Image (tube, rainbow, N blue to C red; front, side, top):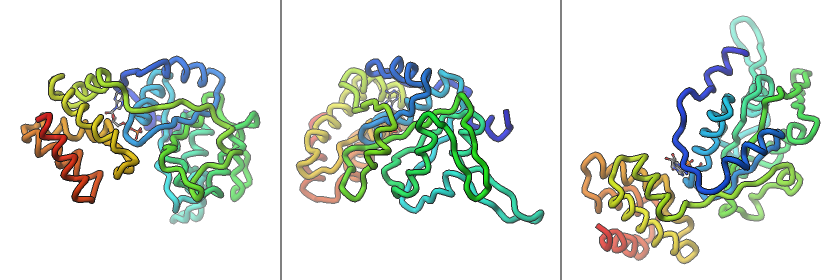
Length: 267
Ligand code: ADP
């Protein structure tokens, strides 16, 4: 296997606390190389899950954060000019398909639809990637799998995946874990004790109930980990929560005060 792909191997087990039967379902999906879509709000564990699964399956993982300026060449590859002349450089999709990685396209809905369609021939039984500019057809390595993440909350008419893209994937739902599990995760990731972690989770639960009532997104597990990490360094919990949980999610003074009040209820 090429040296380039080695750097995408995950040596150490990424901590992942299963929430349901997602590990077994993913293993079954990988065994038939089914392209997978991980659905759920931002910061709820999708990326950590795919890192854990890549480690467990012993496959390299190539992650691409998608954005609207991304072009098909950013995924597939392009010719570069250097002192020796032009040379082809594989993009992440070509690299993963060639050498048998799991390629994870994070927030794929951010990419324009004309970019997204380049994944189509890789996601059906052809499992090929045409490198049109190079005149090469890459036949995907048997280990190759495509995974995308998708936050249905951001979905709008302008920004949604085409049905013809969606139907090429199996889907797994992700959400914030229940109270006890999320407490365990926050404590594990930050080193705060279970009592403090439980309070952080309770604050998040209050904020999540406000989603759609003035808040676009609730407080994510990722944000709780930021707050817990600050507390673990000795920052006062109320201040840590303001910085890590409240200020980032709202600019509205009334909502900010309501969330600050929720923080002082617990700390
Ligand atoms: P997403 O990809 O859904 O935006 P991440 O996977 O980056 O979110 O999750 C944010 C953080 O939350 C992770 O870095 C990890 O610390 C933590 N996390 C969330 N869910 C879990 C879980 N089930 N097990 C372990 N850590 C988790």
